[in-house]
Length: 268
Image (cartoon, rainbow, N blue to C red; front, side):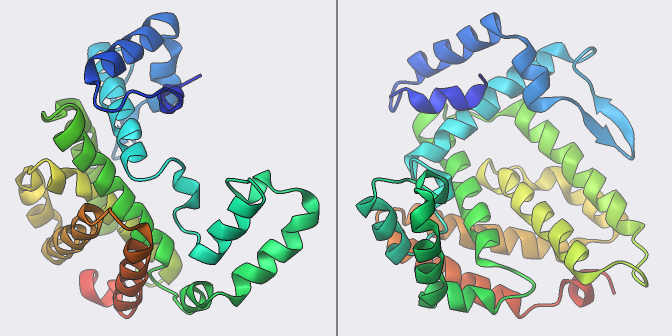
């Protein structure tokens, strides 16, 4: 059991019940805090540790539980978000939620249908920035936005401190990259992860807390780009009344972003 257990209960629009559920989980299973969040390192050394920052992790755990529950305001299962409509219809006909729910005899037909969709074929052409990267960014923005506007309506202090340390640690790493040997795919993955994580700051209007570190490590262009891209993620996230329209917009954004070269933009 962990904070994903919250997704099994109908707590929409009742943050009191949700908060009580979280408190009960922590009380009955205090090990969830460590198992779910562990510790955060900075420059290779522990920065936030459960043993010495128990209250910090307790509050962080609650905030992340709200964040995970925030995902349910967009879609019940985030694993189906990347699927094109043809695949969702295929799953629905077989009363399955994901590929794993299908009987083995349907696996080949599922894959053949997927490969034939325009959506899949366009996504396969992307090399630097995939459709799933936009999906992750939009879903994270939507979850945070749901927490802010529908659930807690307050700033998650510990979550943002955790995010700040994580982002600054990333900048420190990037400043030491050996660009003569680092592979492009690895560089892309690290940059995309940083961009998606930085969305926390945009939603809660705390972007300025990393300004001095961005300047210190020489990544102003990365910060500027991340802010602009997260703004686009949020715009798509707010238009959540039609998932199929959202998917088209996300694929379009992925295709536009895929044309960019992160190495040249941020590391030269």
